[in-house]
Image (cartoon, rainbow, N blue to C red; front, top):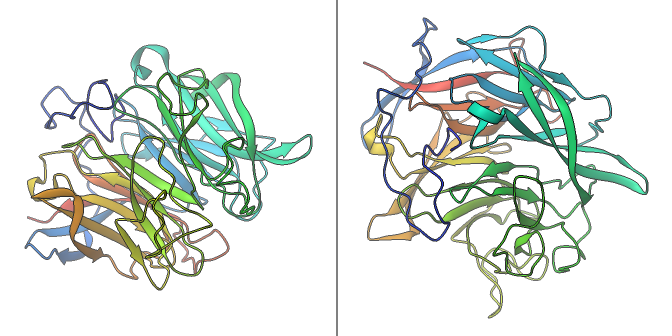
Length: 380
């Protein structure tokens, strides 16, 4: 299974059983990086930040391999590898047909659940199609930190300079899920003939997964620009972040076949046949990549939902109600204003949170060491 969830393939409706980071899990070396930006959580956990990689260009999505290597995308069109906490100097792939305009470019990355044997790497990126910009899902095979044997899987997704969604992950059911924005066309999220404004569920070859509600690739619909999602390791529920229009950024609990309202409703608005968010934010914080914390390494965080905030320039911790895990008990801002725009956050095989910044994307205020990938570790 993908490293950020650390669970075996099960039916989506089943509960995901708790798992710890055991001695058989590959552990990246602890490293000698200094711990900076120390802080104490609301419940007394003392944490700090170690920078793993610096001066990279707009890292958009992070994924761990079973052997502990980290793969990540840079939006201009490069796939990079971090091995033993060192950036491999030569990119694993340089895309020549990427359209890195506005919010487009090389976006999501996901490793196949059986990556250790098949070495499949999936990418989602923006490019120019025959009739205009499109978002394309492709699959490569990795060998010695190089990607080759390209296969194009899905191309029927419109793209624009904004609202490309772009996150891809394998779920606990072994299917590939993909978040696709409305490509700045508000007519698409409510159309079941379009793949835009949707969460898609595909098999490993990019075909509609068995059990999808409409017989197509669509799992949920009525989305504006969802950029992060993950599964609760305790209940198996799928949660997602979504950019609102003017404010009204959302956290949603996604259920098969449900309509999440855009552009008809958002925020606190309701309609009987549409879903309202579990929580929404005004003013905008621009929530992006998201992960549940599945490990017991930092036991206080187990089952918490984390996401990066771009405009909000912080990492958001979301604590669910233990008596009703469909509800949010509290939220907490970590590293507020300290690292700028945070694009993605995942949990490594060492049980620590890793995040990346996007201060060189034209909307941030980069320092000489941006952009960076860092991890949050306990302070002794």
